[in-house]
Amino acid sequence: MPSNIKRKTTYGSSYIDHFSPALPEGTPKAINVILSFEEALKLHLSLGQLLGHLNGYNRSTADGKRTAVNLCVYTQAMRIAVVEGKVRKGGATTDEVVEE
Picture 1 (tube, rainbow, N blue to C red):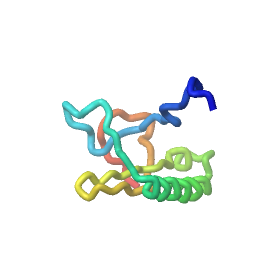
Picture 2 (picture 1 turned 30 degrees about the vertical axis):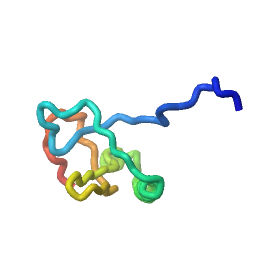
Picture 3 (picture 1 turned 180 degrees about the horizontal axis):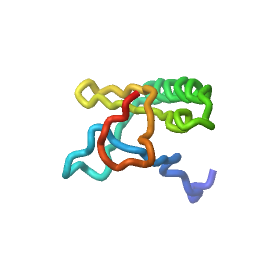
């Protein structure tokens, strides 16, 4: 294989609806979360399971359109949990917690 073929450096991205709690002043612009291959597979499967579950909701309703994925990062325990969440109504910019 020729060595001059360009390779991808990123494999996709997506926009975040909000952070909860709000990020404090002085937070770095980017935080890297490094996962082993095995842990990345677990995260991939967790996301797939939740997305399959969310896909069962009626997306033509307001509540159905607000369904979301919440990636909860536990910085002390060095863990990521994949849980069901909701996006904010009307694109709110405050750090109010959305009631489930």
